[in-house]
Image (cartoon, rainbow, N blue to C red; front, side, top):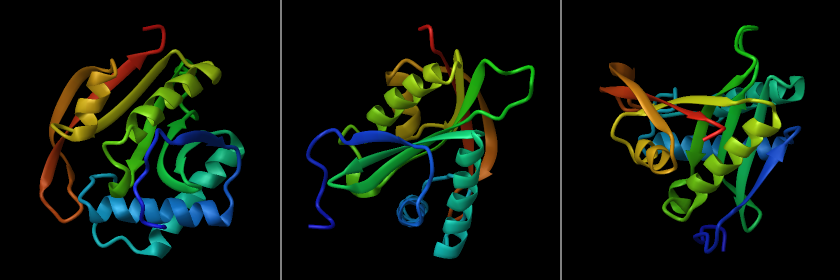
Length: 180
């Protein structure tokens, strides 16, 4: 059944290159998150063309080694993703930014987010990074998950971004020292 819910923790794997099918699946995931109100840099409605343009750009960054991309799959379908931005200024070779942690609405509250965070931390270590940094909507389920998993809040900025259907939201910055 294509719309069935995941029953177990998903499989998380790293994509070293992005196929056209994976780009489409990631675009569908992004559209679902924006449709659901996630503040992830895009406004509603998000077109498939715009979502594909974004993911193809990420795929180019992955191919250059500027980004490290993870996907979570259930029954062979991509239900979540996160990536690390590795291409940072030369005085920051020890850290990476965590970006676009997305979980499809049909797969939420089933361990997908936690599996992606654990995998991103492990990938950060594999990439020689000792510090990960991210920002998330203040008060969101994502913020609660990060904190529950040991991430530390380090500041909040009010009125930081627009929600997909309008209205400002605050963002909270968090970090994780990978030696923790």
